[in-house]
Image (cartoon, rainbow over all chains, first blue to last red):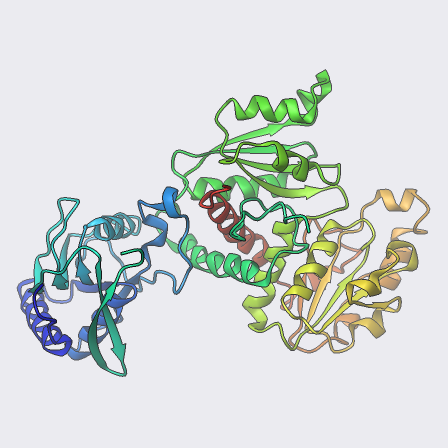
Amino acid sequence: MTPLPDAESLYAELRKLVAEAIARLPQGSVHLIGIRSGGAWLAERMHRDLNLEGRPGALNISFYRDDFDRIGLHHQVQPTEIPFEVEGRHLILVDDVLYTGRTIRGAMNEIFDYGRPASIQLAVLIDRGGRQLPVAASICAARVDVPEHVTINLNQEGDRFTITLEEAHGA
Amino acid sequence: MARNPQLNRHGELVHLLTLDGLPRDIITHILDTAEAFVPLTEREIKKVPLLRGKSVFNLFFENSTRTRTTFEIAAKRLSADVYNLNINVSSTAKGETLLDTIRNLSAMQADLFVVRHSASGAPHLIARHVAPHVHVINAGDGWHAHPTQGLLDMYTIRHYKRDFSSLRVAIVGDVMHSRVARSDILALTTLGVPEVRVIGPKTLLPGGLEHLGVRVFHDMREGLRDVDVIIMLRLQNERMRGALLPSAQEYFKYYGLTPEKLALAKPDAIVMHPGPMNRGVEIDSPVADGKQAVILNQVTFGIAVRMAVMSIVAGTSNT
């Protein structure tokens, strides 16, 4: 198991890589979309720190999960909000931890129900491996190795991020 | 104590049969889920894939184009396959029993039955006899219950008033024959509305209403004073024939909602109606089309609420 990274320095790295990616895309055509809840916090803060125009999007993918038949509907926290046109835009999809790839698949399915984007890049704070689908991050601040029964949680306290590890239930 | 037939042993919702005895956290969960479905109407593609591959059978033993259509739209927006059956004109006319009809449809791999029946308790009977993976939603049974209408009314009230804990709500009209009124009273009480009023002529109010915790008024002007929400009920024409009421004109004079009577409620009071409306009988056109009426929004919210109920029960195991 690799040592627990410092969330603020990971965030600074992610922000730098995202800023570089935006600079390579046509000006004014890029939007950030965060996956609730951790990814949405990251997208919101990057949107502010990078002085981007408009508002970032936030996805709640519970209507697109592939485990509905096994575990039913998740309790709703906040719905999806995409306050811009998706059609023809370059999107940077933001999440905190990339693991099986199933969340990203659900997120992409949901995005396409809003329109056909010109491109989607995936930016994640942490890639922990363990992929079950052919999904890869275009931007990643760190790769870490943690045992399967451990969950990595991003927390937001005020305007600062922290990362904690949690033993999964039943482990 | 017998277990609530609509909950599994973990207390989760597997069927929606009545709002009677339905815990507050389940009602709130349904309303929260519906809120997440409302923004779908703004999207390019108004569907989500939750019920892909599932078969929803709309079993209407009693006609109701509007309710059936909203259930159909809700199921289709969840990507289910929908089959509409008007049973009163097919099997039962040939003498098939209700349970035989259900067994036949179950053999066609139904996952969810939406049932409207003129006999109170028919959806309960069906729910007791379906396989564990099959779910039942009551779309109105006799004079008993219309739980999704009750829930969409609660959604509408929460949308406009945010908080139930300081509201005065008046339900006006034919409470006796109204499954909507019964479902509304139960839900309002469960959600903690401190004052529910019922307004109507003695012949259209059932006895024992006080036991449900409501205040009864026969004078509409007195009953509407300072209320936040007015729920008007549809007056069914057959009541006039049954000698319960003298005439539609007479009813309108005493219990029709006119701008002048509406002015007695709070200035920001909302006016609701489950539809279809009888203009000039229970509601005056200037009120029905006025700023305070939220009747068409109820219809829109109704689709989101039915999507919420369907997706919650379909995702809950009955074992």
